[in-house]
Amino acid sequence: MRIRYAFLLLTVGAARLCHGQSLPAVYLDDQNRPTVPDSATHYRVVERRNELLGSHAMREFSLAGELLLKGTLTSIDPPVRNGPLTWYHPEGSRAAQVHYRDDEANGLYLGWYADGRVSQRGDYVGGQRVGRWISVHRNGQKRSEGHYNAGRAVGEWRYYYDTGELSAIEMPDRQGRPLALAFFNKDGSPYMQPVQVRKMPHFPGGEAALLSFVARTTTYPREVRQKGIVGNVLVTYTVGEDGHVSQVRVAQSLAAEADREARRVVASLPRFEPGREYNLPTAMTFTIPIYFGPGFSLLSGLKPSQTPPSEARAAAPEGTD
Image (cartoon, rainbow, N blue to C red; front, side, top):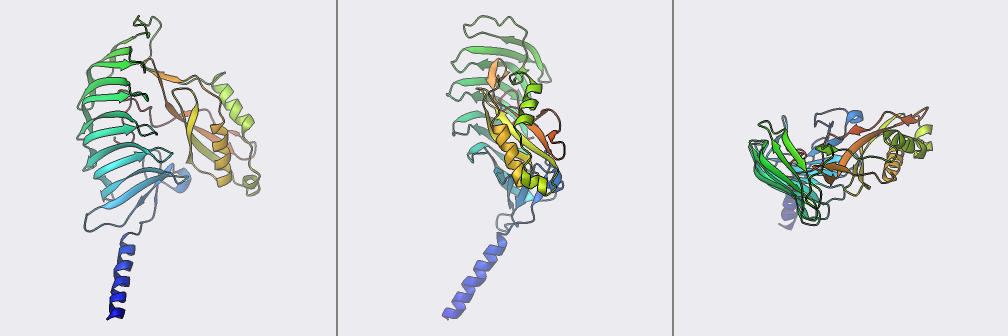
């Protein structure tokens, strides 16, 4: 009897193990389209179907193995998202969460800073933003506030300094584009210089100086050279509200040694003049390609990231479109 009981436990355990096994990883490009590993920016791992729940657990990772998002699929081909989806910061903390129904975002969207403080909140219906949306500075002060109707910004939008003073007012047109825009100084007086919704971060000396810094600082790793490995490492990084570089990650890998060298160089970039949106210092993310091979050099200049800064008015939450 004990032998039969032990055999039953082993059988059930083996079935559970098999049930939880993952399907082969799918490599994806920056548009979430399946691609070959050499062209991928990340990959998706899907568990075998849970017959009880009728769904597949799903996770996506950077090429360096960092968790990017986690959720569930009710169909693999084509992928259909259902249930809560959670995005993650490179450090591992939650970055955002929203519920999906039939592959459309529905319900409350919440965004967080890496330290766990709320950065943004609003609602989705049928995959589109609706109602009141707000974003919050790291110190808890309101950053922006306005309304959406069927995914378009409507009415007056207000933006605030982290000390509470009004920094900008915008009135969008029927397509959600800026119709009227006014900036204000912290003392409440009108900002008299030309205004622009978004101003990119500025490296001391400009883009040419940035590319020169990277070229001077980067070493072609001996191990990579000896193996005859040639190609690009794509590295994403964020220029924070204070101008410092953070969240450095490999978006497209070449070889472990080259990846480490590329990350080291980008992490060592000196402080930028921070970017601004609606007259407010704003974190912005970029991708830079670095070429390793004979005649080592940068392949090209900066390439803007596919993901705009996470400002409630200015950018949709990553991955919800």
